[in-house]
Every structure is written in structure tokens, then in C-alpha cells.
Image (cartoon, rainbow, N blue to C red):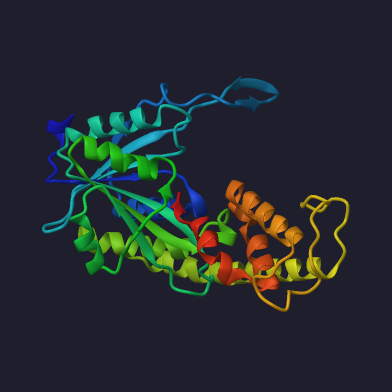
Length: 319
């Protein structure tokens, strides 16, 4: 297959679903704009379980596995040739082996670098300009990234294949970069085209690829007011909850008591307040959507500075 298409030192851009749809939005917009040539599919039967059936006229039929499509794009003179992998879902098991299978398949085209996209949840408000963070598998790659205003991810984790592929690429002797677009942690389940836009802008600068971002810019402007409204509604809901007595379905255990007012001396908390904060941290670690409740409580008690580093550690992880 490699002989039917000649690519010069192409980069592999691998795209999977993730937090805020940052990676999929950026990747699908890029492929739709460039119109790459299909290269076929990567077999997925060894890595995906069938967990559903499809119903047609009342009859159950076996469901299909997620598609794993490969594309190639030959750049104009002076541009960067690209191979795209677009997966409908991340493997349910044997993920590292899947990465090796993907790299083995694309290495025949002379791939030199692997790039993935992901999201990074932070306290950024929806109206702010997102930053782009990066993780690499070779330190020298950070030099070029700093030139395009990318911030190294000092520590943390990248869950799923958007990060795992970098480790597999290192085993193959390939350079690997994961670009993480910053997005508000309170809206991790909501698509964030503004973050995807920033990721694409950085990628285009690195790869010397040009596409018209006008439609994505317009989409980002349209979505931003909804995210601002969501943030304001959440803050209002939390404020109203604090003013009312908790009902029987309150998410926190009955043994925890919440003070009506912040203590006069920040950091001087009762043992009950400390237990309450620890429970909120436990919940936020398990489900980061709970972090807004934690942040509101830390602010209300006047102790956010005391817990700031620990709170931010909850979000030193991309997807």
C-alpha cells in the first residue's frame, strides 16, 4: 500500500473522543477542510467489545464496533504531508497494543512525528482566551513549542490514548506531541470549540498547514454566551443552596455540618468543617464535575488559598 502513495516525512495526527470534544472538533474540522484521501480502516475487532444491539422494526441485531479510519493528505509545495487517524471511540482494552498496531500500520508511510489533541480542565472563565499546554516524548520538542506560545505541562496525567500514543511512539523511535486545549473544568461535558480553535492554531503553526478557520471561529463565538450563562447558573444554584436548609437528598453525609458564615480567622476551622472539605475533595477526585461545589465551599469558608495547590492538582490531567 505504501508504494501507491508517496508521502514525504509525514506526521501522524491521531484523533479520539475526549473531554469537551476538543480533540474531535479540532481533528474533524481539520480533515473536513483538507479533504484527505481515504487509506482504509484499522481492524478493531481485537480491541473493542460489542456492548449494544441495534433494533430495526422490533428485531435486535448485533451492534457494530467503532470505526477506525485512516486518511492521507499530500500538502502543496512547501507544506507538511499528513496522515490522519480518526477513531470513533477509544479501545475498551489492550490500549497500548492498539497504539502499537496503529504505529506499525502508519510507519510504512515514513511517519516521523505523532501528534494528538486533548483537553485540559482549569479555572479559566469561558470569556478568556484559552492557553495550549503540551506534553512531549523528547525534551528538545519543547523548544519549538515555546516559540508558538505553548506551555509545557509540568506535571499531571493525560488519560486515554491521546497520551498513551506518545509513549508508544517513543518505543518506535518517533517524536510525539500532545496539544492540550484549556477549557473550563465546570463544563467538561460540553463541547468547547474555542479550545479546539486554539489547538488548531498551534498545530497549523507547527506543521505549516493552512486552513480557513472562519466557521470554527463563528461557532466558538456562538457557544461562548451559553457557557457563560451555564457558569452563572451554577454559581447562583450553589449560592441559593447555601441559603437554604439541606433536604433529605443532599449529596453530603448528614454527619457533616456546614457553618452559616465563614470563620472570622481564615484557616481556623472546626473539625466538622475539615471533614466536610475532605469529603468534597474525595468526591471531586472521583468526579471532577463536583469540583465547582468544592471551590464554592472553599471560597465561602475563606480558605481557598490554604487549599489552592491541592485544588489545582485535581486538574493537572488532560483527556
